Image (cartoon, rainbow, N blue to C red; front, side):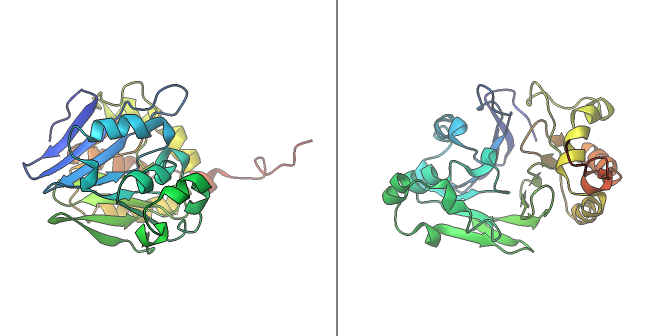
Length: 265
């Protein structure tokens, strides 16, 4: 696996199957976010495409690798603005289906304006793939993408997407870091911890859920964990370093007490 330090990063390429990351499309005041493209035998899926800040530059980048007519899915790990606010545009300008948790399916229409709804191809609910809590396999080309549960990490209906050919886990906010350059690889895990710790302490629910997640991930063959913010963990050594660290982290409700729940005077 090679990370190319360009506008797009090729995470995996065996000739018929590719995984590509886009790390620098957010401009201005928006939080840095990564978007992803998976290609298999010319069929495509976009993961966590973002909102209006990224839609135009992302589609320009996608056109370098595939045609929008080849896009089968737009997949959302959860409902946040930096994840799926651009959904109406994808429904208007492509034939892609939207993949999201069943918990958020009935909330997504709030993203649509009447103008965009009138321009969509057919009933958009027919293009919604509602993920059950235990996840599911999603066929792409001649392969599958596996939606695996990551509930409360940090959303109540949260999924991550595993590519069994590339052995990459697209982990959403789990593993996220606040860095200046998301293309720069992690050279020292210990020095990377301060770039992750406060984010995970606030955005992850609690250590119980983290331990359940880590237990599941250790049963899988993961060569790379690629979060939606910041730098990926490349190779089993870094993957295991991250799992060992996050497994013991107290966060979320573990850190809440009466000093937080105090009525302002």
